[in-house]
Image (tube, rainbow, N blue to C red):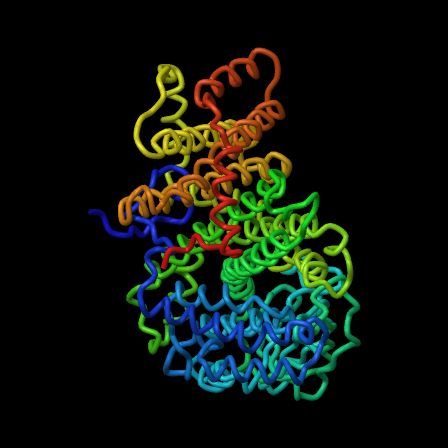
Length: 596
């Protein structure tokens, strides 16, 4: 039997993974399950009872809860033990992130503390910086903020206008500028920020809030996430010791981009926790809401909604933990006590920037879908303030924006693939040539495939060929200027996202069948079939849009004829399968597809 395989970033697009090669939630170890259970108990015991309180900003309460999370080792999950961290694997860290998604104010503060706030120091800090700051961040003694965005520079953050000028004695950088929309700014003790040295050298700095010249503006009045602090941070002649440069002068982009990659991945896990909580709320309501003489959960259209939420959460979960398994394999063997441990970690994680962006985009958009369906199931009650679903609806809207907008992340996905192809790290162009060669002689099978999910396995393989054809044709037409055609790039990115989603669900279910048999995997099979049945034609439609944008006349007709060969499939009865999924969830009133 094959072992879990360290695939290259983006390799899923050109290689069909075996079930044994991919980590799934059914592979959680006993220790990982215990960590997840501990985080769940913290969420239910400490956060859920204070959910209403945490919907409004309460810095004292947040500090208290952050301190408790620190005592339990949750804040230091990604921090080495030598700096008082828990030094957990990425699967365990992901489980904590997933379960601590209750109480918006806390979960947002926690996310910054354990992600973009502390990880830059873990990855790029000197030994002295790590010794000084990481223990305090891991215990909650210090709360951190990540200050990248400026008034005129959001997605274009690397062109920051904040300046840092070296003092005459060479001991300090004098920091001047303003950062905008900074989470936890109102009560943070430590600020990870960026400035231009000598106007052109984008550099990262560690700034202590208590230093003279650091101030904050008023709290922003936001659409959602009211329980988190969001303010502007102002630097006015702040004297930052040269030893507080994070990484190298002029290499701040390395710190920023690596940090954002992990932040994006963690956001995917965070949204998964939200999905599961909302599904439980929606099903409980649907079981108790009586209309026309029976609970609305018995009506077909409500069952459809419940099933669709569960399917999308199942796919998200499959993707998130598949990625966590990859990250653990990539980090294997790195000694955290070594000087270069952080840089090696950053380099390893950078290879999976594409998967991190996929998790962020997919997870945030699924959560938006799930919370929207919850409001719809609850009807007028879901629209009323003080209903947790109403606030969840508003709170979810920020997720496609921060950690890089979903539009930026779609560009990152394709740019990452193309860069890897150009450098020879990923043989994408060879794969495109191979598919084009197959096209001439390929004849679709007339009979249905036999075997559990065999048809679905073939559809995923065909989806990869379709995406490669479309991406290859676009790359050939525009070459290095493809990035200027953002609408086409977004279509290619969406095909890549759907392929990763389909395959992640597929290999997870096949692995479960191997381990526990077809009967125990029945709902997993149903969810996988429905998802692939619905997503496959979407990949075909997106490819057609790409071809229509880059070709016309006879050339376009030829391309579409070739595409048709790979896009044939017979639809299945998804209505029956969705009813089966909903009927398995309604009695227990919670997401229950994680077999642990």
